[in-house]
Length: 289
Ligand SMILES: Nc1ncnc2c1ncn2[C@@H]1O[C@H](COP(=O)(O)OP(=O)(O)OP(=O)(O)O)[C@@H](O)[C@H]1O
Ligand SMILES: [Mg+2]
Image (tube, rainbow, N blue to C red; front, side, top):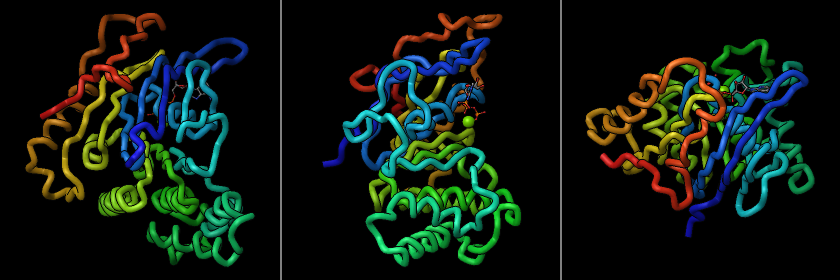
C-alpha cells in the first residue's frame, strides 16, 4: 500500500535572520504528501515557495516545526530528495554530461561501477532531449537547455522525492508540454513524489493531484488546498473541455487575483491564519467540482 504520509510537514515555520532584521517567511505549514503524489505550490512571488522546497531538500533548517521523509526527520540533503533549482545552478566550468555525472557520482559512487554511472548520466540527458549536447558547456546553451540539464541532474539520481522550483519557465510551449507529460509518466511509473513550485495555473492543474495555495507573506501559510479530481493518465487536449479542469483553474485564479485583505502593511501577527487546509486531519477547504 502506498504511504499516504511519505512527506510530513508539521507546524513548519521559517525566519531568515541577519544582523539587522528578521524576515518571517513561513508559519505553521502543516501538510502530508503521499508516495507518488504530485503537489504544486502556488502563491504570489515572495510567499515562500522556494524556501519551502529548500526546507524539504534539507538545504535550510526550519526555525519552527519539523519535516519528515519516510518517517525520518529531514536534517540535511539526502539522495532520496533531489531539487531542480529555480536558477538551475549548473557549474559553468563543467560540460552538461559532467554536471549530471557529478551528481550521479556523489549519489552512487560507492555502490555502482563508473561505466554504469556514466550510462545513467547519459540516459538522464537523453530523457530531456539533450543527447546531442553532452559536451557543451552551460555558457553555450540556451536558457531552456540549461533548465533541462538541471532537470536531468535531478532525475539522474533516481530520487524518491523530486522537488522542482519553477522548472519549466524558460522552455518553449512544446518542450514544456513534452516535459510535463514525461514528468507525469515518471511519477506514475516510478512512484516518485513530486513537489513543484509554479506560477503557471494550467501547469499546476494538469500536473497535480493537489494544489497548495500559499498566502502572501510575511508569515505565509497554507491558505487552502485544491484537490484536482481528474483521472490519470491526463491528456491536455481532452482536459480543455472538462468542467472539473475549469473549476480547479478558476479556484486557483480566484485565489491569485483576490483583493488583498485589509489596507496597509500587514504585521506578522495578521499573517498568522487558522490552519485551514492543513494536514493531517484538518478540515481542508478542498474543491470538489
Ligand atoms: N537567504 C535568504 N535570506 C534572507 N531572506 C530570504 C532568503 N531567501 C529568501 N528570502 C526571503 O524570503 C521570502 C520568500 O522567498 P522565496 O524565494 O521563498 O519566495 P518565492 O515564493 O519562491 O518567490 P518567487 O515566486 O519570486 O520565486 C522573500 O521575502 C525573500 O526575500
Ligand atoms: Mg521562488
